[in-house]
Image 1 (tube, rainbow, N blue to C red):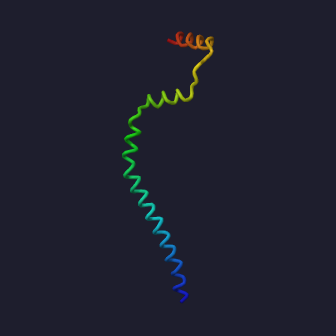
Image 2: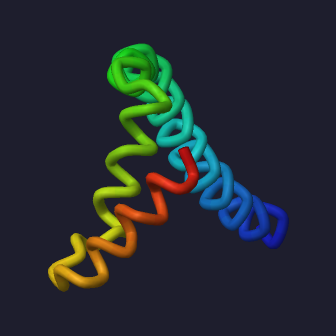
Image 3: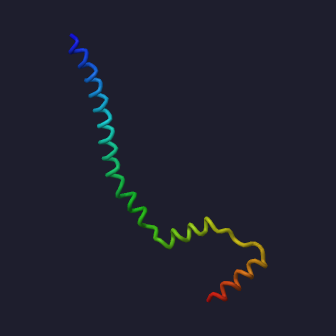
Length: 79
């Protein structure tokens, strides 16, 4: 009888392990199905568009006229 009591714990462990294995397999299958769709969406954008979006997010427009003129003069000197 003591041997069967030890096996009950093993069966519970195997059932729980099987459940999580099933969840992992389903998640893997879903990942494999959705991955090509997500990859296509990522490829639509190019590097320049990403860079411009990041610059627009980070940089703020200059509202002061004097500072804006100084920036424009600096840009003209660079060219």
